[in-house]
Length: 193
Image 1 (tube, rainbow, N blue to C red):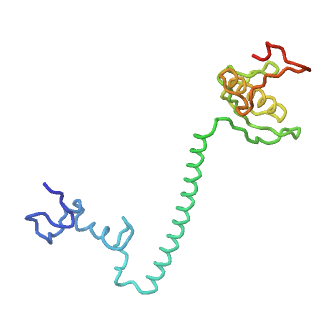
Image 2 (tube, helix red, strand yellow; image 1 turned 135 degrees about the vertical axis):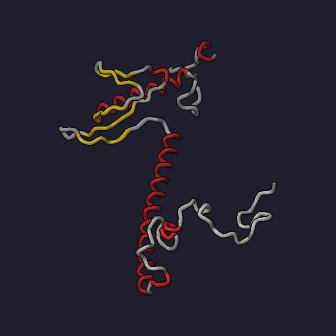
């Protein structure tokens, strides 16, 4: 059976079929006026004048109110789009970057800066760092003062350098291997191999 276009009647159907209660969900004659006409959906038109009886001033006031409402909706839409774009960029950024987070946490009572830092150690680095016997676990965020943060970042970076060394990745891939012996004269035979 070919698809039926809802704007054209099917074969055998009258073109101007009268609307019945069954077509509109059986709302009945007494409630039909609530849903008909120019009100907002669900707003009864019982006490309202019909659109033909409204004066020009009333229509202009209604247009002005609708335009103001439209401006508010446009502003809310712009804010929602900006927030959506920001959240989308943040999600993409989190996918493309490592999970290391460093951000300012405020000032301590003595006036020193405090920082949040998430520890992201290399796989060869174990499960924790220890400073003065206190463990700092991989994948957790901690609040550090500036000096302790420097120590923790140095320890984390050394785990990554070690990971690269044991996996055969050169720390500086552009540096040529050198086979030099310090001293004067000819290099010994064992150093030339």
